[in-house]
Length: 287
Image (tube, rainbow, N blue to C red):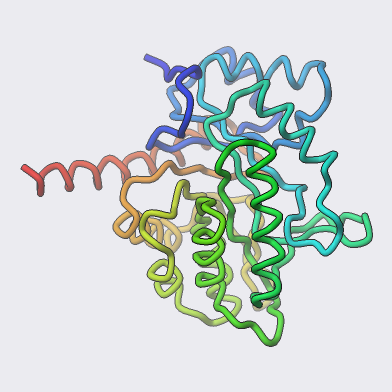
């Protein structure tokens, strides 16, 4: 039995995959038994055409998450009301189970840098991005999730470690946290902090979704390339995250060197097995 795309409100506590263009046709033809699908919102901002037709067809069979990469919430530029209006139109048309964006900035003076860049973790930055998240939630009429990004440099003079900044942002705005476990490992390695301290610093009830992906080693850094299977060290950190936050909807991200659909589904199955194992353990303890 395939999951229904018409149940709405929240993502099922299962593993999903990012739906990318090479797999559009196969997903619609085969209807694989996957819990849910994620798409990048901006790819469907057009008023019509083939992309929206495909998205609407997929939505009839699966819960969807709209994952934004272009809102640039941390930028000092004015918040793009045009971008927000397009997202609202898409949300009303698709009725996604979840909406998310990134804890980052990616534009300056109206020019986009094609990257998700880290914020200075200061009180000023917290107030700035908090107000923009509040505006986004007001316009959409929905609680959104904010994802931690990987980073390779840090600003001097931070008042908060990243996990405390993210936790406080969630407390002030009511947004949920999209916890990217791969990004935690990448940043922990690059900056020398304890990944477990990050998990312990996030409130148990704040996490609405988890992302998993593959990284690459480049010189002395780990780089979040989304071009490989999830590495063993990230699977182990994911198991710790599930123990802390409980069963959580989990996405396999793979955006470069995209493999065949069966490889993505096998990665999702690994996550599903961990979720199911935790649920079975909890039921056994409660019995």
